[in-house]
Length: 351
Ligand code: SIN
Image 1 (tube, rainbow, N blue to C red):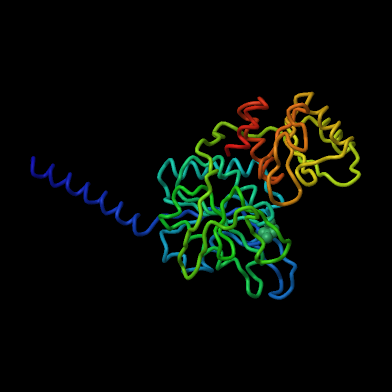
Image 2 (cartoon, rainbow, N blue to C red):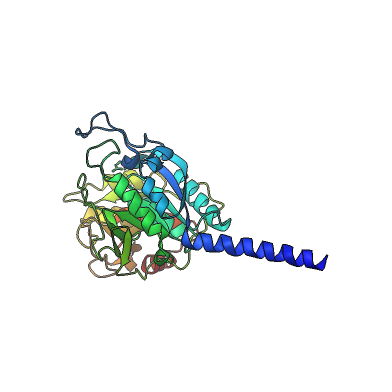
């Protein structure tokens, strides 16, 4: 009797060890598909017209059988949209599913396929809300899957390479595009149609992918240690973006601030600057309790606190080096926890 219990125990332990060994050598990777040009389909291989988000995940995976050399790959369809239609409901669905995958130990890494237009916003949202240090890699394509010289298959394979690599653990959410790896916080889309569109204007890519391998060179210190818990949320506080330009009419500010937002991000000129009437309208909004965050339209650099603009006096916060669309993401999430201006400003320096 004792002997058979011992044998049974040995059997169970050996199965566990075997499973661990297997997952070490062959990571389990789930691909969550959301649509975008990487799943785009056109009638011609040479013409530019196509519809984003048409190709289902199974077809995308079948088109790149080499991905199976890097792990145990499976796919799930989360949405089938062009990323211009990405929305907060889908962000919440996506991050809740990723958190569930890691909490239930369903996978060692997740890859998200996504349209490139709002890829950077989704990447940063996930960076702030995924409660695991396991790799999450977002990938897209500039040319639809039916195009001549399409980039999606290569990008997908590269994303799997990044997700499968143990060196990708603890690096926050990563974006794999065009043989480069970017930090979610810093990366931005810089060109409407170029393949080489993703750049980290302030700091450059964190790694390079070549010949089925990823090599890392840098790691951001700003990947958040503390995350926002969105488990119980079905929506986020309303935050709008207002664009700055020469001779801007303050009506654009009033129009937005009278629509009931909890926060606004101002994409100002240079170091987040505004003309006098716009500044007055923004200060009035801050006085009413709307969190006004100065960001910039220049595309790189920081917005500095209390230098050119008297932020303390006017009641503004600054985005540090976040561009307006990412400042909006952090402001929405910050507002789920606090409406204290000083705490929110600190978040912009910490996250
Ligand atoms: C989209 O963002 O869904 C369309 C553009 C693209 O994926 O490149």
